[in-house]
Length: 106
Image (cartoon, rainbow, N blue to C red; front, top):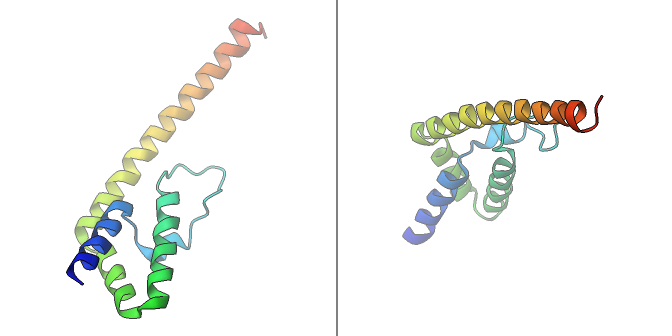
């Protein structure tokens, strides 16, 4: 039981999600800059599966996901990946403009 509890905590920390937020996000949203959507969806699937088998363990998962350390880590990762996404979009725009002006001669 202790090993499975440790595994569950490790999964939650790895996926770093809070369950209610997952259901409000779309994985395929076009202007999405949050790279944690897919881990959120995986965590929601794990939570739903575990909750069907044992609601008590499901509640433990929810409680573990909402600890201050997990929430703070998740918010930090969201902030930083959003910055990286913006920089990647700007780089792609510069490459596209360079392609059109220098290579294709538009």
